[in-house]
Amino acid sequence: MDLTQSQLEQLKSLGISISKDHLNTSESTQTVSTPPSLGKNKLQTISSSSTGSLLKPSINPVIPLLSISGLTLLSFGGLVLFKGKETTTLSPDLSGRSTQRVDNVPTQVPKSIQHYLLTSQQFFTKALSSSPEEQVELVNQSILAATQATKDFPQDYRGYEQRGRLYQSLIDNNPDLLKNAIADLSSAHQLNPNSAEITRTLATLFARSGDINNTLNYLSQTVNLEPTKAQNFYDLARLQTQAGYVPQALDTYTRLLTIVADPTQKQHITLEKESLEKLASQNTNTKAQPPLTPFTTPQSPVDNSPLLQADNGTGLIIAAPETSKDISVKSLTDSNSLSGVGSLPANTSQISITNSNITSDSLVYLTITKGGKNQSLQIISKSTGSFTAGLDSPISEDIEFKWWIVN
Image (tube, rainbow, N blue to C red; front, side, top):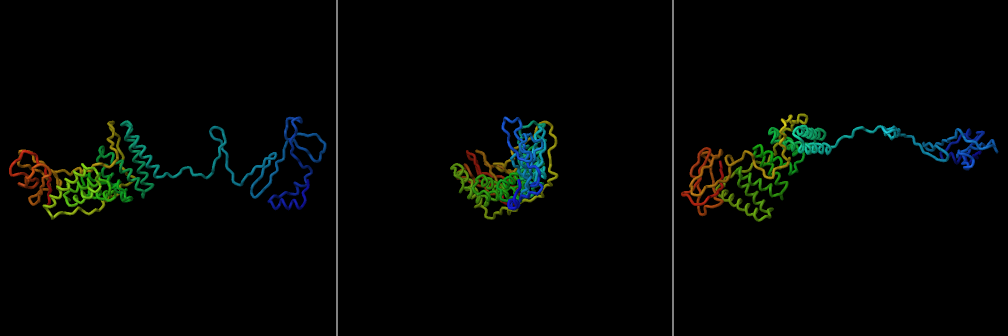
C-alpha cells in the first residue's frame, strides 16, 4: 500500500521515518489469523502479488522495527515491546534460572557504628552463657568490635563507652583493666559531657581505684546532671563527710531532703544532717571541697586495646557492666577518712580510734548520735595515728557518736 506525501509528513512529525525501500517493495505482507479448519498453523502470510493463491505458512516472518525518540519498537504478531537504550544483563543463577544483574553496584556497604555496638554486645551476651573454653574468645571478639567502632567513628562517644564498660565488667578477673576502663570512659565523657550515666560510672571507677577527689568530682557532676535522683545526693553527701567536707555535705543533705518522699528515709537523713550541724558548729575554720576539674587521661591507643589471655578453664569472672548502686571508695575507711562513726560500749569509759590522719596538731570534734543522754563525750588524748574518746565515768548503755578530724 502506497502512502501519500501528506501521510508521510504526519508520520515524520511523530518521529517515525519510513524509507522508500519499504514503500516500493514488490511484495508487502499482511499477517492474518487462519480459521482452525485451515490447519494447525495459526499464523499465515498472504502475498499481494499472488492473488488467489493458496495460503501457506510463513517460514521467516517479518519483524518491523520502528525508532521513536530513542526507543526501539519490536512488533511480534501485533505485540509491541519497548526496548530502551540502557540494558541489564540476565545471568543464570545456581538453579539455572535467569536473574537480573545490576552493573556498577558496590559489593560492600560501609558499616554503621550501630553495627559494631550490636556485634560487640552480642558477643558479650553470648560469653555470659558460654563454656569457660569459649568465654575468652567471645569476650575478645566483643572488645575488637568496640575497638573497630572507635577507629571508624572516633568522634562518637558510644564506641569508647562500650569498650570501657566491657573492661569494667572484667576488673574482678583482671584488675589491671581498671585504668583502661577509666581511659575509655574519660574519652566518652569528653565527647558527651552531659551524660549522667557516664559521670556516675567514672565516679564508680575512681572510687574503686581509691581516688576520693575524682570520685567526688564526678559525683558532683552527676548530681548537677540528675537533680532529682536521690541516690546521687546520698552517695555524694556520705563521701563528702568521710573526706572531711562537712559544710559541703550539709548542703548536699539539705538538697536531698527536698526530693525524698519516704518518711523513714527522710527521718534518717534529718538525723544525719543534725549530727553534722553539731560538728560544724564546733569548728568554723573548714576547708572547701576541691574544684570540679575533670580528670583527663590520655586515650589508650585503639590499635593496642588489651585482650584477654587464654583462660585456664575455670572461666571468667564477669560482672554486669553497670554503675554501682552504692558508691564507696575502696580505700576510704574509718582508719584513713577525716570523719567517721564510733561506738563506746556500755560500762566502759574510753575507746581508742586509729586513724592515719591524726597528728599531735589535729583538731578532733565529737558529737553523740545515739544513747548517752545528757552525757558529754570528750577527747581524752591524741597522738600520731590515733585518738581516745571517753566519759568521766562509764554508763550502762552503748553510746554511738560521730567524729571529725580537722588538720
